[in-house]
Length: 321
Image 1 (cartoon, helix red, strand yellow):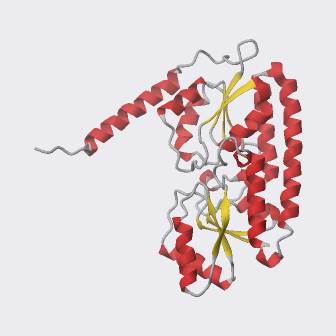
Image 2: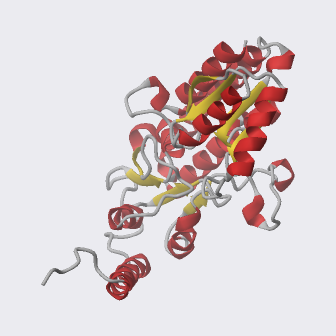
Image 3: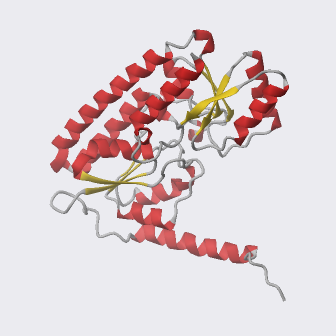
């Protein structure tokens, strides 16, 4: 008799139920050594951040006074990310947690709700006025575009949230947090000017940015590009043949020569659009790879927020100018 190597659906549901109960119990009771671990006199403040961009800012501002752990590495799509049991332990042991909010980490929302009852769990988007947020059809708070890091001015707001949250949690090191934040915000202001100047070098009629999913809306609004993507703002949304045909026609009608792939999104989708345009006699090339929902590899220039944005700006300008 041969047995299937795959467990049946009932066993799968049982295993998932046990895992959910274990994770929930851990979040409610906690396995750390206490709320004040990591404060002055007891070692560094333990900070856990969801995305690499947030972890990078927390490290820049926290400096030697913090130990930062990021959950999502290079090439990871936060829209689809599910926390592992190891991630839950990292979150539980943290003194303070930073996440993007605006439903970027949609599959972790319930987890944050439990955690914020026990420790500072901070959405870095919390100070951005709702009127400044981009939205898509559907209504409700889940309709807001979460890709705020592509407007550098908004990311300055995020840095200020991180600075103030660290000071509130660890006032003994307030002076250091303030000084490092001031220096880092100065670099962000310089980055904002750089992006503005470089995009202006692209002829106005060529300032059209086509990508795999609509992650660059804030970037386009702030720096003067028309932006369109095959998928919507969330990579959980599906695209169909009608979407491919519509984007193909857009490329042909506007004589667009270059489109861009993204490091955290499979390139198969955008390649199908390129092939469709080619079948209509219009040649389109891949202008380069952009970092959208995740930064580059740790230890590289693109593995920092500032390096990531500069890479994107330079790649876009080189392909479209």
